[in-house]
Length: 291
Length: 130
Image 1 (cartoon, one colour):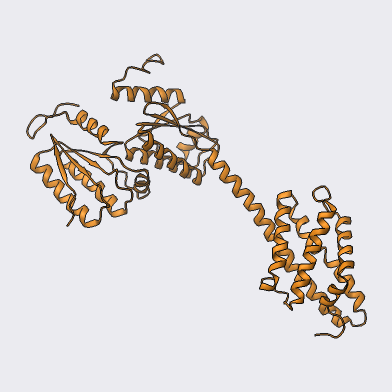
Image 2 (cartoon, rainbow over the protein chains, first blue to last red; image 1 turned 180 degrees about the vertical axis):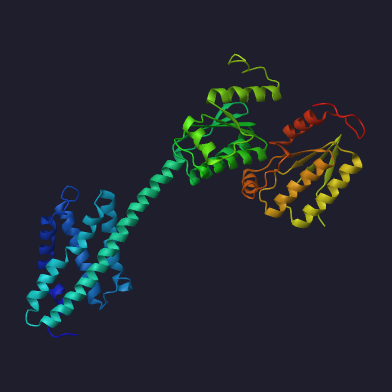
């Protein structure tokens, strides 16, 4: 391309100086988070990134960072971005890591190519495109790291959220706490039906005292769960519908039709006992609420 | 051609579906069962599908239809032992089996039939009030 030292050569020749300059600037900048990362770690990360980039450039790779020659660089960057996402860096602070390399590189370049402004411009443009692409890659990885954290937390929440408890022979209770979304209702439905098969319970009480809101989708899911329970030969009682939810359900035009609803879990339990008591002709548990 | 056996138990007929039903089999069962109900004058039919762990829309509809037909022939129908996955599929398909009774196990299904129909009933005998 041009005569005189190219940006690859400069990087090779002055790598130590550039690294020092870069780390110094990162520490001095307003986005540096010396509280989250130690200076030695920062220096090590910077050094690894710089040398990986150098190796890729020496391979004659073009500034297309999706090429296989850039695999090492991508790897280093991904690790840095992920570890920063976990430590609580903001996206801006993470991306600045790469972008802050521009200044020392530009300076080294312009020092080396003072004589030829045309070639200098070309080289600066190359550096700029390359670092932009790498910066975007960092941001993407950072985002992915954050999403993984969120996903993991969601999964943990799901596992916590669906306990089916056995209240009595033939009576199951499912106390629901927290907002119901489609995925959760699906799991609730599957767990409940499986428990019904496992225990052979004839009545399931779904208690929604802890559910703050019900929308059409959730109501639909609840109705489906109840229909599926009925198909399997068990009965469902809904208890603990709060006044606001009762209003919402009616306003939404959801037809709870044949579903038995009771104000509290205790009332539902009494009804359940009565029903199982009648069909099993078991005297126990009868009349404990003054019936 | 495989057939699903229909067993007579007193006033009731017992059908247990123990293989994956295919369409032809379901049609055959529909034929056989309606004929048997009319021939024996049965007052109740118990269909156990506990071994069925997959249904498609056709089989779902056939189960629903067979149950309804038995009811039209004045035999109470109880479907027992439906697996969760089958129940979910039927609900998603919009087949709610209206008017069909369900029970968790054959035992409970038999109790239900007895309580709804009484025992020892034959054609022509007055139906006792459940």
